[in-house]
Structure formats: C-alpha cells, structure tokens
Length: 220
Image (tube, rainbow, N blue to C red):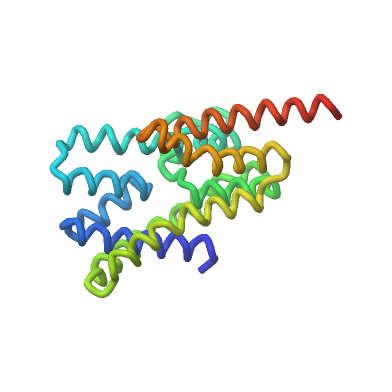
C-alpha cells in the first residue's frame, strides 16, 4: 500500500471508531463512506444527527462541506473529458473526486496520454473506495480499543497529507504564496467568520496569490 493509500486507510479507520462512539451502526458508517465519500461531510453528518439535528439540516450541512470539492472537480474533469462524453459519465467521475485521488491524479496526469487518464483515475478510485469501506468497518469493530484522541488524530491525517502533497507539487511562486496565505488567514477567519472561515480563507488567500502571481509574471 502506498503512503497516500495508507493515510486514507488510517483516516477511515478513525472514522469507523468515531461513528461507533457517536452511536451509529457499522452498516451506517460503511454506507456513508461509500455514498458521501468525504470524511468532513461524514463527520458533520454523524455529529449533527447525534446532536439531534433534523435530517434536512444535516443534509444541508453536508452539502456545504462538499463545496470545497467544487474547485477540485472543475480543475480535474476537463483533463479527462473526451469528445461526445455524456454528462452521466462525467457525473460518475465527479463522485470519486476527493483530496487523495485528486492530488495523485493531478500529479501524474502530465506524464500520461489523454486516453490513459480516465482508466488511471477510475482504477485508483475503485481501489481505494473498497479498501476504505473495509477500513471503516475495521475501525468500527475495533473502536473499543481505540481511544477517542487516537480516532481524532487518525482523521486529521488526511488534511496533513494534503498540505504536504500540495507543497511538494507546487511549482510557481503563486502556488507557494497561496498555501502560505491559507495557513496564515485560516486562524484569522476562524475568529472573524466561524462556519465560513474556510470559504473566506480560500477566496481571499487565493485571490491575493493569483494577483501576486500575475504581477510577478509581468515583471519578467
């Protein structure tokens, strides 16, 4: 198992333990891993339902957490699009867009022929999904032996991996600036706009990095 796969496996293992601690069955935990396929959304869903939130409110909250995947989807789908490709097939591909799959695909697509990209993307996705359904089930079954702090730490592995992968894949100065601004502005907007902090951090930090990148290009 590669490092990205191991990180993802451990993260879903932690989610399985978290789900049982929240009072949800193994079947419910595994089902959300396959259908939602995004740990932040799954955590928000189970936390909301455990706190007594209405299902409709939990659905809206999960939908809002998925907004973060929209830029990833917009960036990667055109790289796989084929002539006369149906919208249904593109929606199918979009379902599997997640941080780990996106990072690995974007890192390797430049070295592939266009026709090889969809098979690679689906091959990677359809490998990690069953593995992480298994990880969810194992985490749920082993939750009695996993301390809550350890479950939380395992869930935190994915964003750490994402930051490190993006840093290693960054080439332009604007890329590094965007990540630096994100790390700096995140705590600020967490205080100023709780609940919308991620959105404002990305919007402001990304815009400033893009403008700075344009300015640096003009000076060359």
